[in-house]
Image 1 (tube, rainbow, N blue to C red):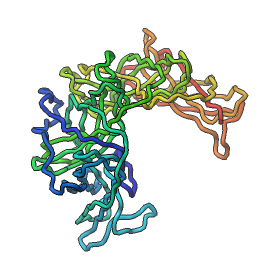
Image 2: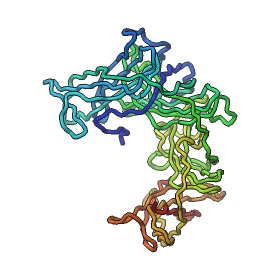
Image 3: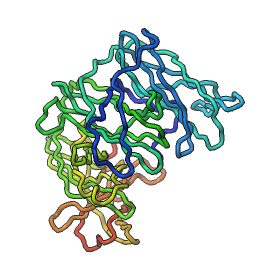
Image 4: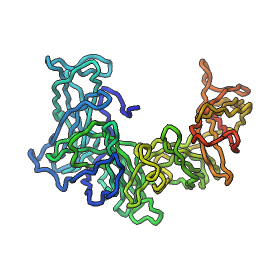
Length: 463
């Protein structure tokens, strides 16, 4: 499925700070479907309009999903930080008729769009992109212009580096950028957003996109546990040809709030299911004194420390002090297409995603399942059953988590589902029963019906 947010406004996330990343550390051995970038930009292009916000490059293309993409890059040539940057976009067909529509699906001549960078310091750049379906229309011409921007008093950026980058070409023409953000400052860092772009040898932008899969909170430089760095992954939708340069853009600021959570992460194993999806499994434990809703982020690394892949996940359970829950990171994009020898040699690292791990104070109730059945259809397994609200509370939702354990009591497979009030009701009332069904995709040689399993059923009391 294509991971794009379809809105009339361009997808934007607050960002600043452009980093030019050197490719000297690119791996000498890369996946068979990967192409190494031959060079990287080492300096900004000459300022053509000093004192202004300038559009330095634009282009358009139709991707493999038959969407028409307009992409570009802007640079802040002023001597002050700016924000609230708005660009004006027009897209027309061969007759000059506009193909754009507003949020009410009404035709308009132009749309306001924003770059992936919300705040631009002097001399820094930001990419932008916009797409519309080309299924029923034939775009012929586009135009992007600077509309407005304001002075910014946002926090100053912190020092960082982009390291261990790898570029991977997928069979459908998409290009994947993976790497690490490294905190070079002596302060805690908040990576507010991260984006990437590809360029040809002449510096023309070819594709751009942002990502939410990266380590947002980083410890000060030199952290002994290695939490001063974290993996990222950016997908650039293709086909993209003549790529010779890449850029990674990061908005990073000092984080003045130290995370108050204490989370431990233990890896328990990994497997590849029959569809080729890579599963990285483990357990999170709340070592703190207050309730949390945890998240984790994982990276897969080559032997030369380049980042092969990255994925993140939220745990669907509220954990009180001392409680644990399983996780399954299975949204990796690169490793799924690699041969078994490269899959087995990847180094696996999972850390708590402290920014997306939330302190909470929900009242939760432990429930039990009845009439649990484990059925098989080929390599697909289904765990079904019924949960009864045995508490005296009205519940807003119930999370049902299944975990299968191997002979060493380690998690070998897990998945979850959510149960909500029936139609016409706002809550699951005391005594009410709800059916659940949880799929598990496992290797063909596994027999989950003979494995030990545990059900975790947690009801959240309606507020």
